[in-house]
Image 1 (spheres, rainbow, N blue to C red):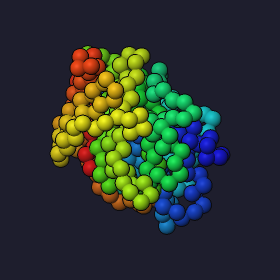
Image 2: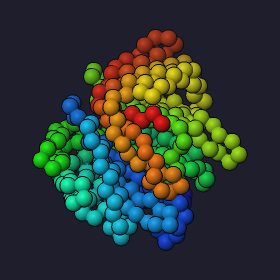
Image 3: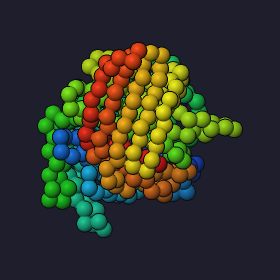
Length: 314
């Protein structure tokens, strides 16, 4: 597969060429499932340095797990897209989970189906949320939204505890490259109280050749209307108040002002890549609350609150 084809199909495994090398590389998909009470997210992926491994991370409101696998347990499909790690299968149509880890006394099983996948608007110049930056070959971390919202139905059982989803909310994204940014914020929500809105935001310090810049990718979808706020469409960062467990951000693009406020609930530990190694501890909450207000010419055109949101402040 050539690089142009992969960039235009970011859901596919981008790192096949690294499987027979020792160059530092990681690639991970993020499958988030939320009902009105709680969230469970699965992060299947690979990391390559001197060693080659596959992994699955699992995070809920109250716990997280990291399960290592030999790289020979990792498979991928192109048409249709899927990722398989041991007996676990992940695709845009659903997930099938069969995790057994004796060392952690952990058994996770179940299936969730995804219907009515909604994604952001894309084109040749902007194959995903990174826009033209998708084609830059030396980015340390690439990001893609694969399904900003879908209907999730099924059940996951963690040991003896059941998590059930009945036409609830799913979300799929991914990252790949060699390292996560040294500092960033990420939040995502689609459990809004009074609307069917979907939202994602990331602001990160991006290394770019000889200098760094603050990169912004943000999208809000309300009904059939999409609002993008990004570095490449001249979005301005008017307010950036970030604390350990709180954020207050205001973005401006043309006549639109977008304010995002969130207070982080207790986070669970995840592992993030540094030069291909999954050795950096970060903490993510999947039970935070996000307040969104969108104005056009100082008139409020959208205001709502989402619970069970993902939030990382690093």
